[in-house]
Image (cartoon, rainbow, N blue to C red; front, side, top):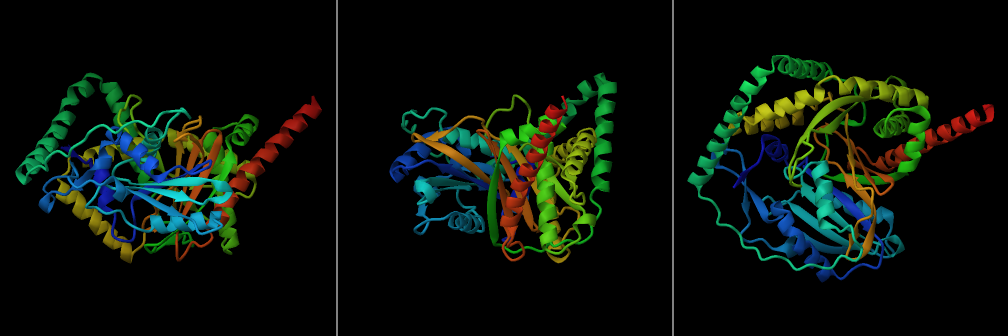
Length: 472
């Protein structure tokens, strides 16, 4: 019996029929499409490497303990692997519409919290897999890990047989309660057990504590309300989705010419995209403040397992007010440099760790109360969310077919009408833009504007290099 962490459970408590807390992605493969039975066999052969895929969430009565993972005695692979096709002739707009509809539907909590959709009739004879997994199971990096488990690095990898499996008996209520409170005691004991080490290195401990406290103060200052913008406010249960892409080499060209990191270049392009979006809506982008939640991995270098959440976050202000692309890039680089030393990510991780010591009924009740408040008074501290996850820089294969693209999806929640997911794969950056159906019909404009932002910087970098060459 494995207990969910407080952070895992939070993603369940945040759902209310409007905000859906699943992450997802579309894997686009070269044709021809495989046989559906072979695809189901392939997925079934990998399930022993992804144990959560045959487990469901078991809630403890009265929230006397955090939810636990238990084997689903009625697990049926055919329920989770689904088959559909785009209407002829099949278009990218049809695929975006399908993605939006699937992401508008919550996962069934009575079953393991995932779905895999086999989609045929894509343009160019291609086909796709839409992977949908609840955020209580994975964060972005773990989600990429699941993708790597599901697929193969070898085009000619054989179709393996599925190992035998039978569900473990469902635990009794006394066993669940005993495990929950024993686990809480173990978490507390683990924290206390670290005290001798902390006291033995007072200088290091004080520096770490001071950094975390400083991060909390910085986080608090950054939570001040921003001026109202159309990208924030109430949302409904339905979604829109759009995508675009860039060459990773184009981003490297910009970095080599103007400095900074790949992430700095990408965030600068995201800022350019939001500036374009706001201006298209008739808003004053020159004086706008767009604050983004940016998840940050706090996963240990030697962390094992592909299903877990190990993530904190920073609050980042996108410099949409700057019209010059190079000024935006320099502003991004400067701000990211400050945030790396702010302790904000460490503060978020500390809050999450301390949450594991709180009584579960308190955590769940407070979260649900907060969601109810946001229904009435939509927050304006965070305007959007931006995730950036590194993916494998080599091709992956499914039944001998190469995965050509991977287009990510990030959920949105109350007060946040648009979110941006970024994932790198095999020399490309793929952007997935999630929008509220009723208030963000122009997510396609944002997706294209982000890609255009990279091209704009790349052209400036090439021109700068040519000018330097002519001078010498």
